[in-house]
Length: 287
Image (cartoon, rainbow, N blue to C red; front, side):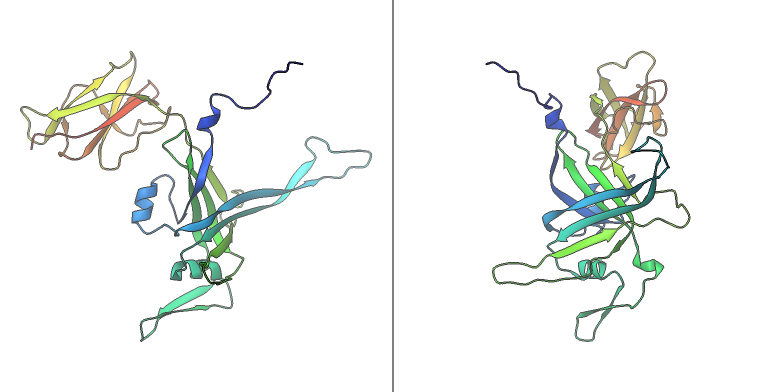
């Protein structure tokens, strides 16, 4: 008897896998921060063991109507959202202990210790702006980012110790609505878009203008499109159809002011300013 395999596996499956444990950050700005910049800014929560989790669960209530014998489309309402994030932090630090205790305060003692105690009540300062998970998607250079907003730990602190083992601070934080926007459920998920097609960008020193570079790009720009550029360090290419109209428009010929060692990004955008192709290169300037 012959049969045909039935599976949800497609050619795109290997590019849609969420890999490994990822990392957790405090007060991460997904529109500005990268993994490297947030780590260097001291926002990283620390190494973990056993990863963590995220859940956003609505409490959906069926509205009861006489004569209706089952669930009816449109007759449900959300009573509340339970939004939580957990992280099993391997690094036992002042920071991880304070987060776990929610209302903790710390002070330095005369003999060089940090003394940590807890307040009996919760004030506005106890809430973290956000706790953010940054993880790796198999088919993308950009991460998946999940932001838990107005985060407060509600599981307390438990430290278990044993020979031939290390303690883990198990953090569970809940996201909270903000009084000034009660319609905003306290989480955000950022999923990376598709890649741009590649441009090959080449930089050579200007022959006539000190502090400038001559840029060449291939393949040629498509009819109706425009170039946009940015110069700096740590530049990241946008995703396909991202709006790049706020960048510097470039005619494809004029030399660009830049320092050797900087990076330049060239984006080809359509008539609506949406990115279609892009590339970067390190600047060689007329120094």
